[in-house]
Amino acid sequence: MSQPPDQAPLPASSQIHDQAKTAEFLVEHYQKTYELTHELWNDRNRSFPVLAGVIALAAILAAFPDPRSLFNIGLSILFKVSDTQQAALQSALNSIQTDYFYQLLQTALLAVILHLLLDLYRRNQDIARNYLYLAEMEKEIRAALGFGSGRFPFSREDIFYKTHIQSILLKRVRLVYNSALGALLLLYFILRVGHPISFTNQILVLFTIVNILLAVPTIAYFLDYAFPDLFNRSMDHSKPKA
Image 1 (cartoon, one colour):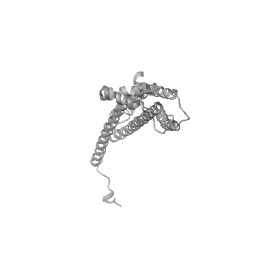
Image 2 (tube, helix red, strand yellow; image 1 turned 90 degrees about the horizontal axis):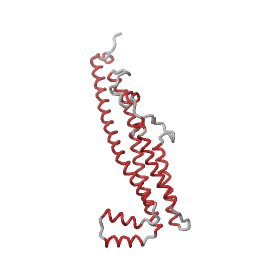
Image 3 (cartoon, one colour; image 1 turned 30 degrees about the horizontal axis):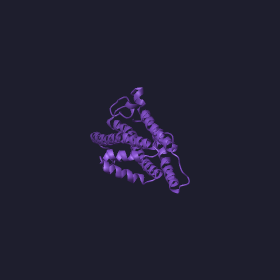
Image 4 (cartoon, helix red, strand yellow; image 1 turned 120 degrees about the horizontal axis):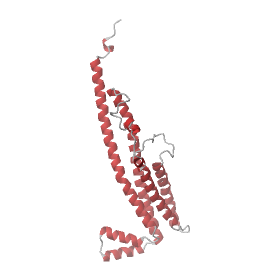
């Protein structure tokens, strides 16, 4: 019995045409995904120094038992206020109890640190996931183009990366970043713990509870950022990107 016309095999030229269109679509999608990943990389690189600067500022302010004068000087320099306005601002700050002002300022800074850290963490996760996706896409592209495993085109994030020998210093870039950020966070929390806590004042106790609620996720997300395998995620982190 003859095969129905609608089930007849496609001519070889049609199959080659479809394969070429598939490869073209995959390459275009690969390029857009790579461009998106590059933008995320740039955003992450810009957010890191901002986070480090905020932590350093918070640590400096935490070292002063009474940061009101330092805060006044900082505002005066930032907004270029006159001596009369600076005196008025100092008077207003002096009307606030030292402990209240310290706790309010540090609580606000810790909230900002947590926000920036979450932003850095999210971007880092997106970058790692995108590179894994690009590596899998390269396999699809090579298959569509008929490239064997021994060829390097479209293997930048997969075969070529795994076989290319990198310098020892380049492999330690991520470690340097993590160590710098971890050292700043450790210094900040040591200075915060060194500040006396009053358990007789309900407002200060409330500030302490809020700070603990902010500090716990800050530490947890930093540890997961610095040590990706710590919480046993399924994502493969065998190829870190600095």
